Length: 282
Image (cartoon, rainbow, N blue to C red; front, side, top):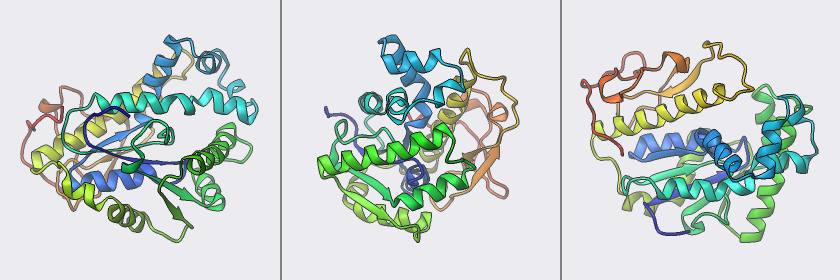
């Protein structure tokens, strides 16, 4: 991977807990959170522009048809093997500071600096149980894809001999985050990190805004259903306190409209912060 801003990489199959851990560490340490999920539709558009067969085929199928393929067809249409390089490109374009924690299933050893990376590795039973808790069924195409991604990532880990954190289901999210903190201790100490509450609040808004854009880009697809405007998404409380891990459930349509420095902060009940504007995270 070419030189770029300082970054820690967190990979693993769907259900590994990457997003939960990355968000906890970003808020606790004043880091920039990069979520591969938030860039799904940008990456698909890039692949379409390049004529990638998997992306073209996926867009050409109905929402039902695209989930009925074989495991290998689902994997190809997921763009898992292609998106790692796109994620690395995204991160290289970020400002030099603060330290970024970048997470996502398509974070692959071939695309990132493995000495600053960690893959969360739940057991197959743990992944299955977590997917079922999300309301997925083993007959769902997405469920089958996520199980196939598990074996794909196992193969990548074995091929590159990268650092992993085994998860047997007994660890809480906080315990998993603490284990990741210990592994990344030197890099976290080195930083750089957002030092002030306004800087941290700007980073939180940057991450929250990315979630809103992800939602908007999905419903902008020509095949997408109308946005019901009622689904609640978890947005990080923007108070900027390092001890805060609260989320605010809100429909993306109700999230404060840009420009962000002029819009009100999203706050959990009982939380407060000075008025905007805040410093820009870049």
